[in-house]
Image 1 (cartoon, rainbow, N blue to C red):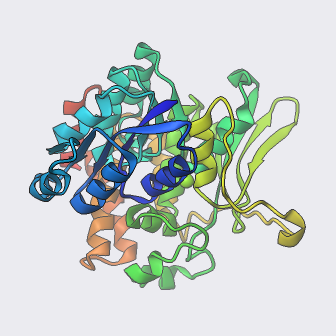
Image 2: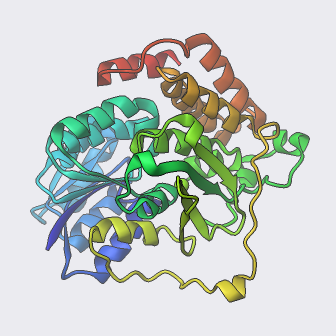
Length: 373
Ligand code: MG
């Protein structure tokens, strides 16, 4: 029996995790759950899965959470500190599925508590890669990659020596604008950007995917996760999203992981690791799919990917600034205050103004850089 805490339990990855937990009641029990502001949704999850602790990040959501949990014996708490407390409560595994830089502090809290982290929060590695990886190394804590591409690479690496790895590819669907002109992309509305061809995900990652910023963030995530230099990391457009990641070795072999575009595949891998557990995803029928196609990403039409690659190469605080500016710009786009092309323009301007300097060594540094950006 493994105990599991889910940070971001009401989101897309949280829901997929709970779906798997419900199918394996004999293997997993839920310790703590957190959400940003959906108190009623969180209370329902906590009751259904018998959690002992539930926390909302939004202080205003405390009263409804407390009321909904009254008489259940489930402890209710609120505020960002309460989310970090949830992350550090005794558990065998923490599923870190909070979106954005808000996920960094809870991830660090879980690591400090010595708990294995299944990491779906890519922004924590983009914004604070050295800090998070350094803490995990010091504490001897394993990070299991949930992001489908990184999970694929993790599987394709299969414990190989990193010095034998020549190239790592992560794939991208290309998003809803893959075939659009630069002019059409610039005029895209939130409802256009929110139409991901293969995955149903949260709004932030879906907009990031539309501009290929998501792939840029994922390159930086892979750079930290696998300690690979930028020149060995490549993004590849693959509209069918059957191959999720590939590792090329010095002997010329390339090992790929394939599977349905269903987050329950990588999540099941993390939940069961190092064993395998039954997963409900649609089985791959390659004869039915027929052909798999690949293309180079177009950095001209998708400047966000170019910015992320430049930030990864520059290192230091550049990725932190990239992440912060992008996060704010995506929110402004979703709120219809700026156009789609402005997201990368604003991010580029923030990088030019604030991108030089050392990487954050503490959470305090991180918030200073984040706010400056
Ligand atoms: Mg991904």
